[in-house]
Length: 322
Ligand SMILES: Nc1ncnc2c1ncn2[C@@H]1O[C@H](COP(=O)(O)OP(=O)(O)OP(=O)(O)O)[C@@H](O)[C@H]1O
Ligand code: NI
Image (cartoon, protein in one colour):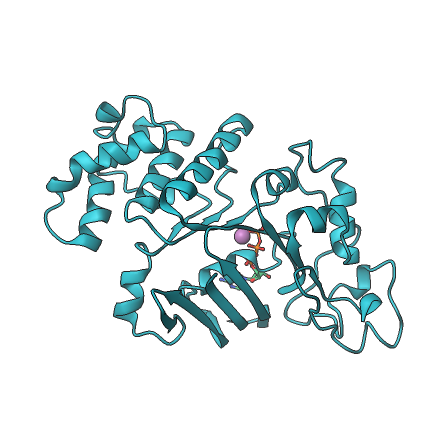
């Protein structure tokens, strides 16, 4: 069952240097209870795409077109058209984010217990104090040892991993339907990374939420995601079940990404660069944006016409397959 349908999402940044075509015509679905990974080199549009889902794009960025249909209890809401007030209610409660830097999500002046209670109170109403006990329970749930005393700690008194967990506790406090984690694991070491993703899995089973996670780590994708989206230069170039994409990558870019990782199923290696440089999105290459770096480039085709994203479960946007 689909919970989210993103269609033709286009986000531009209007800078002095020109219009940055950061995300263009991106369409994908998110199913209930699944874990969807988004991968791609730096600047490929992963963060902008997921932030645009709840209109978290600030100037000079602008969502130019598209729709994001959120299905809830038989209702269909276009999040890109919803009044601000209604969207704010959904953001943080039904659709929650865990951002790259945990420190930015925490206020240094308040204890983590207080901040979690505040998030709960903001969505359920009532006094912040009445949710302090619940905050302790949430900290316990994200496997923070001795949650009672930790809830009384200020952010600077906690390690990076503990801060990250506190942010996750905050994100899940209102039992979101969708959790979006933008590289939730870079601030912490590998052991903690693995624990966090196991924690997500447990929470997913308990709460029945869907997860979108952005990462550069193909090992984590292989181990923890059901489906994967590969982005390049602001577009989706390949999408499909993780096993299929890893066993039979079709887009030359995906092939390059996976070649760069010796054995993605076994290792925890980070994504290695594919030869060449990332495209300039103010003046992106015509046709397929990957063509200047593509070993299979077809002159007069790939540099002229844009390949459509086609396929059933396993989709690819490449002229080699059309
Ligand atoms: N505030 C901004 N002003 C101008 N351009 C921006 C701004 N924010 C993002 N962009 C551009 O949008 C494009 C997509 O950026 P995005 O942050 O989504 O990439 P990403 O795939 O998340 O990269 P990373 O892996 O480094 O997080 C990039 O080309 C970036 O330069
Ligand atoms: Ni990003």
